[in-house]
Amino acid sequence: MNWETVIGLEIHAQLATKSKIFSGASTAFGAAPNTQACAVDLGLPGVLPVLNRGAVLMAIKFAAAIDAELGRRSVFARKNYFYPDLPKGYQISQFELPIVGRGRVELLLENGDTRTIGVTRAHLEEDAGKSLHQDFHGMTGVDLNRAGTPLLEIVSEPDMRSAREAVAYARKIHQIVQYIGICDGNMQEGSFRVDANVSVRRPGEELGTRTELKNINSFRFLERAINFEVERQIELLESGGRVVQETRLYDADRDETRSMRTKEEANDYRYFPDPDLLPVELDDALIAEATADMPELPDARRQRFCDQYGLGAADAQQLTASRALADYYEQLVAVCGEAKMAANWIVGELSGALNREGLAIEQSPVDAGALGGLLQRVVDNTISGKIAKQVFEAMWQGEGTADAIIEARGLKQITDSGAIERIVDQVLADNPEQVANYRAADEKKRAKMIGFFVGQVMKASKGKANPQQVNQLLRGKL
Ligand code: ADP
Ligand code: MG
Image (cartoon, rainbow, N blue to C red; front, side, top):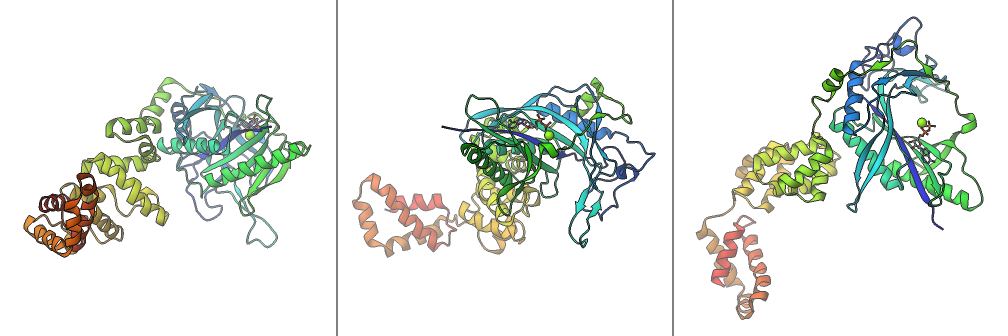
């Protein structure tokens, strides 16, 4: 009998505002502990929170991007719990009336199928501080720099049916928030964190009891954590046990999930509307302002890349993975004029080099203008595609522009037909047996055999002979 996996994700995206959600303190990452927490973030008495307008605009943008209903009137609520990194004793969040209501995202799966995943809601809230357990000799340090950082918590419907789908959905949300510029998506720094709710059931039955896997900060861990948890639940159920609703922590080093707290130990948050903050009412002008500079969204851009540049679905998907990559591609096409060639170079050489060194496209030592300059020299036959790869490596090492490297290394293609002819004659003279075989063969075999001669000529010319001319001369002479 089969089991069906059911997954719903809660994603925390840190909003890219300069200051915190209810105070003017900076949100910059990496400052010395407790230097960026002001009286409001510290929860000192006698201070009042003031809502950051920028965070509201970003939430509206997100609603537009996932085609969601907007909460025209939303309310901030206090979620009460005590933790050392939350000195106020409550987190300001939204509960009954969130700013973003029901929406949806489309997933394009690896096999080409599409799936629609429902978004239940997304709400604004503040982040808590951080407890530091190292370097304090049996005590715990508290860094409140992160306290009050704006978050958008995006809650999905339990619509995903495998770890892979969950990863595809999380990646999609990650892509969208970065495209619309509301989150930097940096998972190492905790700007994008995922909680996975996981249950299993027999197909057609009611939803099973779920467990929640907290604070997963990489897509690889997300997939592994869910797969571990699904297997754990199935084994438990098949051996006659029951899944208890609980929060579990994924331990990447051991590749397992462990219980953190059960439902009985869970906090009773006693939500109530925050009396310090007015309800947020969105008027048309604010909505228009928020959505005025909406960029082209990933799905639309992917489709346009297929239509406008004649790319296949897989290339278009890869080239629109991030806005920076898609921008790079379009700049490259503008410079070199060859859409397909530009795509091949990015998917091939450039991505290979970036992956090799663990760099993002924004950090590429070869920018789109420079790579375009190289591809121009392929287009105008100054160098062959093969030599271009050699030039690219030199550009990557910082040796200069394509033209400078071609000049300095003497890589210009030989197009002087007299020079090529001399090499061709030499190759034919050196290989009488192959020449005789070629002449005795039929057209079909010849088409294959010509490659040998082309190879010899290219080798003799150190790759610099123009391949078209070599082919033409060889065919004539043979
Ligand atoms: P809570 O308020 O306790 O966090 P919610 O009902 O809001 O619970 O659900 C939180 C997340 O858990 C949502 O993403 C939802 O889709 C998911 N979820 C709810 N029930 C299940 C279930 N049985 N299996 C898997 N995911 C679930
Ligand atoms: Mg929850």
